[in-house]
Picture 1 (cartoon, rainbow, N blue to C red):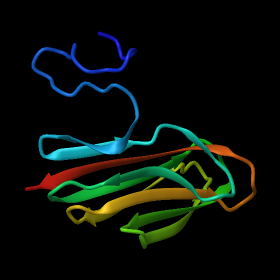
Picture 2: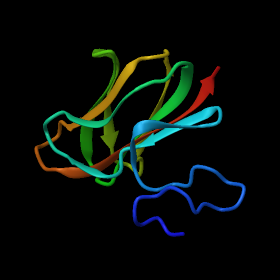
Picture 3: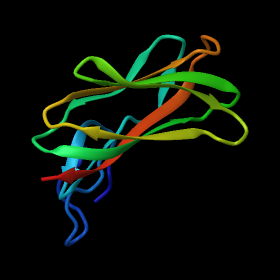
Picture 4: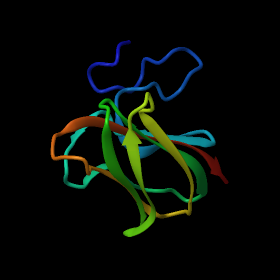
Length: 136
Protein backbone atom coordinates (compact mmCIF):
# COMPACT_ATOMS: atom_id res chain seq x y z
CA UNK A 1 0.00 0.00 0.00
CA UNK A 2 1.07 3.58 -0.57
CA UNK A 3 1.75 6.22 2.05
CA UNK A 4 -1.39 8.21 1.39
CA UNK A 5 -4.51 7.96 3.48
CA UNK A 6 -3.30 7.86 7.07
CA UNK A 7 -0.94 4.92 7.31
CA UNK A 8 -1.26 1.80 9.37
CA UNK A 9 -1.44 -1.77 7.96
CA UNK A 10 -0.30 -2.83 4.56
CA UNK A 11 3.43 -2.94 5.31
CA UNK A 12 5.85 -5.35 3.69
CA UNK A 13 5.41 -8.90 5.00
CA UNK A 14 7.63 -9.33 8.08
CA UNK A 15 8.26 -5.60 8.51
CA UNK A 16 6.34 -3.64 11.15
CA UNK A 17 5.73 0.06 11.58
CA UNK A 18 5.77 1.29 7.96
CA UNK A 19 6.67 4.97 7.52
CA UNK A 20 3.48 6.97 7.09
CA UNK A 21 4.74 10.56 7.22
CA UNK A 22 6.43 12.98 9.59
CA UNK A 23 6.31 12.04 13.25
CA UNK A 24 6.29 15.01 15.59
CA UNK A 25 6.08 12.64 18.55
CA UNK A 26 8.81 10.18 19.41
CA UNK A 27 8.10 6.87 17.69
CA UNK A 28 9.42 3.53 19.02
CA UNK A 29 10.32 0.41 17.09
CA UNK A 30 12.05 -2.31 19.09
CA UNK A 31 15.08 -0.85 20.86
CA UNK A 32 15.18 2.24 18.64
CA UNK A 33 13.25 5.50 18.40
CA UNK A 34 12.88 8.30 15.87
CA UNK A 35 11.09 11.57 15.14
CA UNK A 36 11.02 13.68 11.98
CA UNK A 37 9.78 17.26 11.93
CA UNK A 38 9.30 17.46 8.21
CA UNK A 39 10.34 20.67 6.45
CA UNK A 40 9.17 23.94 8.01
CA UNK A 41 9.90 27.61 7.31
CA UNK A 42 12.11 29.14 10.00
CA UNK A 43 12.41 32.91 10.30
CA UNK A 44 13.84 35.15 13.03
CA UNK A 45 11.43 33.86 15.68
CA UNK A 46 12.28 30.76 17.73
CA UNK A 47 10.18 27.97 16.22
CA UNK A 48 9.49 24.54 17.71
CA UNK A 49 10.46 21.76 15.31
CA UNK A 50 9.93 18.74 17.58
CA UNK A 51 8.19 18.39 20.94
CA UNK A 52 7.37 15.19 22.84
CA UNK A 53 7.74 13.34 26.16
CA UNK A 54 10.20 10.47 26.27
CA UNK A 55 9.03 7.03 27.41
CA UNK A 56 9.86 4.86 30.40
CA UNK A 57 13.53 4.19 29.52
CA UNK A 58 16.56 6.34 28.83
CA UNK A 59 17.66 7.03 25.26
CA UNK A 60 20.98 7.86 23.62
CA UNK A 61 20.07 9.85 20.52
CA UNK A 62 21.51 11.94 17.71
CA UNK A 63 19.61 15.12 16.91
CA UNK A 64 20.10 16.41 13.37
CA UNK A 65 19.30 20.00 12.40
CA UNK A 66 19.42 20.62 8.65
CA UNK A 67 18.76 23.53 6.30
CA UNK A 68 18.08 23.92 2.63
CA UNK A 69 19.48 27.47 2.48
CA UNK A 70 23.05 28.74 2.45
CA UNK A 71 25.01 31.57 4.04
CA UNK A 72 22.79 31.85 7.11
CA UNK A 73 23.25 31.38 10.83
CA UNK A 74 20.69 29.58 12.98
CA UNK A 75 20.32 29.35 16.74
CA UNK A 76 19.33 25.81 17.74
CA UNK A 77 18.15 24.83 21.22
CA UNK A 78 17.29 21.53 22.89
CA UNK A 79 15.16 21.71 26.03
CA UNK A 80 14.59 19.02 28.68
CA UNK A 81 11.66 19.85 30.99
CA UNK A 82 11.75 23.52 29.86
CA UNK A 83 15.48 23.90 30.65
CA UNK A 84 17.99 24.45 27.85
CA UNK A 85 20.45 21.54 27.79
CA UNK A 86 22.07 22.31 24.42
CA UNK A 87 22.31 25.60 22.57
CA UNK A 88 24.50 26.35 19.58
CA UNK A 89 24.77 28.52 16.50
CA UNK A 90 25.22 26.82 13.15
CA UNK A 91 26.51 28.53 10.07
CA UNK A 92 25.05 27.03 6.93
CA UNK A 93 27.64 27.57 4.24
CA UNK A 94 30.66 26.10 2.56
CA UNK A 95 28.72 23.01 1.54
CA UNK A 96 27.69 22.07 5.09
CA UNK A 97 23.94 22.00 5.60
CA UNK A 98 23.43 19.85 8.69
CA UNK A 99 24.66 19.55 12.27
CA UNK A 100 24.37 16.61 14.66
CA UNK A 101 24.52 16.59 18.44
CA UNK A 102 24.32 13.55 20.74
CA UNK A 103 22.20 13.63 23.89
CA UNK A 104 21.14 11.24 26.63
CA UNK A 105 17.40 11.61 27.30
CA UNK A 106 16.21 10.52 30.74
CA UNK A 107 12.92 8.66 31.08
CA UNK A 108 9.69 10.70 31.19
CA UNK A 109 11.35 13.91 30.00
CA UNK A 110 9.62 16.69 28.06
CA UNK A 111 11.85 17.31 25.04
CA UNK A 112 11.66 20.28 22.67
CA UNK A 113 13.93 21.19 19.72
CA UNK A 114 13.80 24.73 18.32
CA UNK A 115 15.55 26.83 15.68
CA UNK A 116 15.66 30.51 14.70
CA UNK A 117 17.27 32.31 11.76
CA UNK A 118 19.60 34.87 13.36
CA UNK A 119 21.01 36.22 10.08
CA UNK A 120 17.82 37.93 8.91
CA UNK A 121 14.05 37.51 9.17
CA UNK A 122 13.74 35.77 5.81
CA UNK A 123 12.07 32.39 6.25
CA UNK A 124 13.98 29.38 4.98
CA UNK A 125 13.31 25.66 5.01
CA UNK A 126 14.68 23.63 7.93
CA UNK A 127 14.16 20.14 9.29
CA UNK A 128 14.96 18.37 12.54
CA UNK A 129 15.18 14.65 13.19
CA UNK A 130 16.07 12.37 16.06
CA UNK A 131 17.31 8.80 15.83
CA UNK A 132 18.19 6.94 19.00
CA UNK A 133 18.76 3.72 20.90
CA UNK A 134 16.44 2.87 23.78
CA UNK A 135 18.04 1.21 26.81
CA UNK A 136 15.59 -0.95 28.77
